Amino acid sequence: MNANQAEIRALHVLSWLAGNEELLPVFMGATGVGVDDLREQAGDSAFLGSVLDFLMVDDAWVIQYCDSAELPYEIVMQARMALPGGQDRNWT
Image 1 (cartoon, one colour):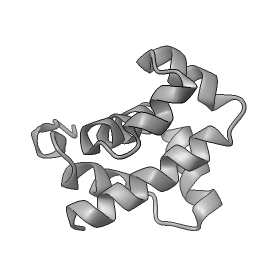
Image 2: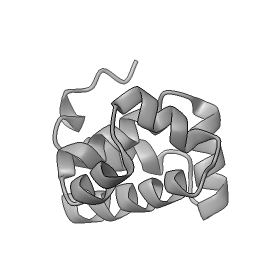
Image 3: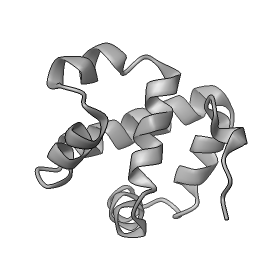
């Protein structure tokens, strides 16, 4: 997966989060972003990496997203690895 594909996937995750009434407030509380920040930072690849980091905090969230998008579960990790800072992660 290249960086452009990863950004597109992360934008899909952000969109999914925005439509998730239970998870969006958790994301906003954990990151400290407001609604305006979501719009402003959606084009920032580092922010998009943090969106994927947040999703990967809980396997159940990854499963929910991937099942809703009919994607393999590893796609989120692959996208994260293609964004800034993703190569530096310890995936163990």
